[in-house]
Length: 236
Image 1: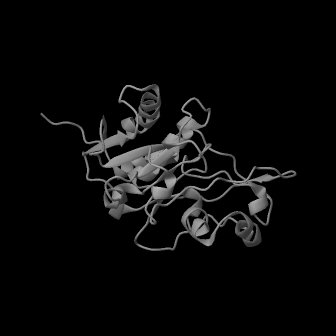
Image 2 (image 1 turned 60 degrees about the horizontal axis):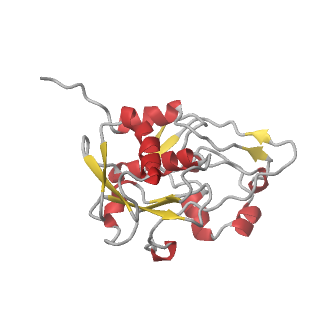
């Protein structure tokens, strides 16, 4: 197993979020936007080879990942091929220190990670209730999606002092705060139930706003996938 300490410095982690506790929180309601990075999208109709460190391809852990990742399948024109060894586009390591969070490079940035390093990490307990949602989220990153809550129009009233108590400046930039309004990103319609949206602890906002963790692909996720990797009908 590759320990997380060996991850390259440009590996963008998801950081463990504080427990969600507050009094009478208000649910987030925002104009709907999803975020992708076109320069990091995989070539259309390509096959992405995926290797998982320390597990045989028929191990229950691998089968659980395959089952969860397959939920993206009907909505994209890519194919996931799980392979043995380390010669793969995406290399996954199980991390026993992770609970319900994971880490992943965004899209084809995985190909820039040196050989011998993972491009994604997932919790080691595939029987956990949150495991499927975590796989869906990390595979969303792997497909080229960024966090939905980081859209510049989300207008989440972050409590900067609270963010500073819980997260480093780099973690805030990568995982929480709005992305710059730039041609680098594609901002397209989404719904607030996106699998790419973090749960929001009211403590982290100035207006006691709350957003629960999403567990399934939403209509917005599917629309983004269909637009990014459109399935083209086969013509004989």
